[in-house]
Amino acid sequence: MASIVGGDHAASRAGIDLRAAMSDAGVLADVLIAALDDYGSDLALVFSDVTVEAEALGAEVAWASGTPPRVKREIAPDRMVVPDPEKAGRMPVILDAARRVILARGDTVPVLVSLKGPFSLAALATGLEGLLTDALADPARAHDTLSRAADCQSSYARAIVATGGIPLIGDPFASGSVLGPDHFDALARPGLSRLVEEIHDLRSPAAIHVCGDTSPILASLLTTGADLYHLEWADLEVAAASGAILMGGLPTELLLGTGEEELEAAVAEGLDAIPNRDRFIFAPVCDVPTNACPERVRAFMRTARRLA
Amino acid sequence: MELLESLSHAVVGLCREEVVRLAEQVIAEGLPADRAITEGLAGGMRIVGEKFTAKEYFVPEVLAAGRALYAGMDVLAPHVERVEGLRGTVVVGVVAGDYHDIGKNIVKLMLSAAGVRVIDLGKNVSVDRLRAAAEEEEADVIGLSTLMTTTLCTMADQVDQLKQTCSAGVLVGGAPVTESFARDIGADGTASDAGTAVELFLRTVDRIRT
Ligand code: B12
Image (cartoon, rainbow over all chains, first blue to last red; front, side, top):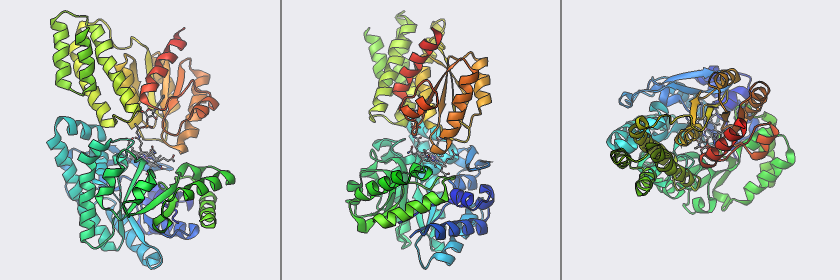
């Protein structure tokens, strides 16, 4: 059972400004640990927001109160050069927060540390439409952008493994809501496979998170060889056949509702759909929404433990 | 006309060069450029929309079809009197607090392909900007998009305020938006994908104009 809390919900739950929490390792670790303890999750996640690596590469990030930051100004693809993860932007904040969470709770729960998949990093840092236009009109250029992004993430993944955390590669743009199987194969899978392989070489497990509809890309996604997949909508039977551990089951919007019965029904339905409970972590399909009511998340964890 | 059909096929086949070549042929043979746009280019884009709905095409394919269509438009447009805005003016935007714009951009592309003049206000758009743009551009319809359940309340507020102060129709969309939600907040409708969204926009423009 896991609660999947990122910096946004953890900060908002603690009544702390999102930017303050997402820019300071001590504060970020504190709010993440507080949420972990409150919700009693069997797994910790160190995740701030989706812009960390794009910002470290030079993209301009904008903050607005109450919501996670976004990329405001993208960079040219050739400006994607491997940064020093201990120095660039907020990468050191994440790495330091990971060390703190691991020190505090690493002996009781595994600690996943989030990084973007190369395709999503390239889309966030340089812009999705430009990247896709290149993929059609100038494939060599798109390829170059993606391999730069993979180089960056390879170095960041190494730094994450060095903290003792397990890399969780999030690839929201590689969702089947955006890409079909051909483009997933050509643009997203190679970078994911490379990262998984490199993480395995470092003797660490690797996890992948994709939100949205994963059905069009599932078969290809499962060939990346990750040890854990955290998915939104997927054919769980097919995913389970890969032998990997699966995580998910509860649509995130239910964490914004209020009805106890509705939650109970969704948890029961989610649990029913699990093909192999030994290799399943029941959790929200994506991170808990920023402003979800903490009591609702507690109710989810309680209900799931009772019904499981 | 065979050539128009080929033009439509070339859009569906995402062949930009072929679209340009055929568009040039249309002009060279003195065929009506306006029909080449509406039946050839836009007709092809309609099929692209259907394929997108059927999950045969995805975002990259729609963007590629858009590129092909615009390349053909560049050749044909100088030969027609007025292309844009023939079928109404629409203001689109993503509601305040939300930065998901992939879906909105697809809707915008499909609408302009269908001959609608589209004013795109981007993401994180306030109700004041929507209202001002709708008035200034004399929009027939305003289209609001959101992808987050957390910003559905903002969408409801914006629809409410627009309905009180604007004569334009208001349509809403994005993954978490349902028919019943759209009805409850007083919007003029919703559509779950870009293909059906275009039909809905065109119907709403017609209704607002009569
Ligand atoms: C890609 C993506 C991103 C990208 C967005 C890039 C971009 N420029 O848009 C990135 C990585 C940046 C991103 C960021 C975040 N995301 Co996001 N993202 C997604 C994802 C995977 C796919 C969305 C998408 O593009 N779909 C493809 C398009 C084509 O489909 P569509 O938008 O639905 O549009 C179609 C129709 O709805 C319709 N339509 C759309 N608009 C309109 C308008 C009208 C008028 C009409 C008629 C029709 C219509 O036509 C379109 C074409 O067919 C979804 C997953 C999901 N389940 O949807 C999550 C999702 C939307 N994201 C989510 C979240 C939480 C976030 C973040 C807050 C994460 C974080 N913690 O930082 C941030 C948001 C920051 C912010 N304040 O906005 C959640 C929202 C949950 C909630 N609370 O409801 C989702 C649902 C994931 C999840 N399961 O939790 N995300």
